[in-house]
Image 1: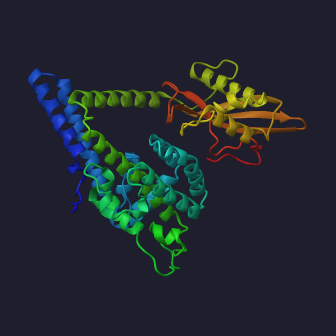
Image 2 (image 1 turned 90 degrees about the vertical axis):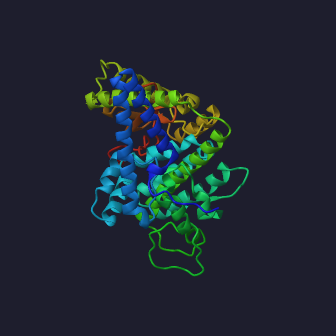
Image 3 (image 1 turned 180 degrees about the vertical axis):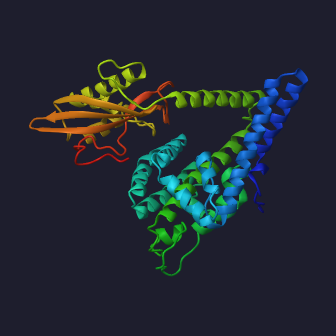
Length: 415
């Protein structure tokens, strides 16, 4: 089947559908004399114009360098990428964005929306750590193998991995990752055959050359970053294909439901923006914690009490459960991590609140003749998504970037 690459995301059916719905809402507002409806319709069209221009600029700058856009990328940061004067500078800006604190972590976490990706999240988190610490070769090997296997699992009727698919199979009629021939073009590089060893440095995700040991100098942040972007784009493509299949079965949303979701999303975003602007970094008053700070302090005390009592079931409940582990498996992980490091006493020295969903706890710990001071990082989650203190959620102890078993004077936590 011959496919024509979209020249712009403005050609995508979902974008055209939103424009039609906005026009219908504007017309309805005009008929009823409802200024708010007309203002909302104009706002939707303006936002769509900005996003269409952004993605088109991204591909004009970086499409020929085999970078692929995905819905996971932060739009504000992508504006900074496309504002660069040259493709080389735009590429470097994109790589630096992926290296920013927590950027990659939330993108990896978002992949847990796929049941077939959840068992792969722990390994991807290790690849994320390798990437941030400069072990690019390891990050590449994991991300490449995970996207291969994920595609195989996502379409169980076919049982066909990503590496076995032709570029034309990765087209989609309604996916931002495939406009400008994005993901299909990258797939051609991904599956390029290598019949002789390549000793020179490469800067593309040559899956076949890398996995078969024929491309031997790919240990750099460009290849590793492109592999992450490709992984997230593959997720968008799987989303698009499975959504189309569901719609084909009659699972369509009404105009009213779509507009309701847009309105609710805009309301929540506006409310969150106002609260985030008003929120200030601070240190918790341990003697008289107020409001959400009291929840932080209680959660930290409960975690430390469970550690002290060797209650691994309770301890495991403080781990972020983004991959849907059972209670028993979480308890087993807690036992494996914490049983070699028992404590007899603890004292919370201070709690810093650098963000509305983050707390850094300095705590003194003692066991027999050893005493040490650790820094424990707590993040607030609503299921798999981060949640600010005013949203539904629970504080969890992050095992990412902080080692509560080491003295912080000897091992500073990852920034």
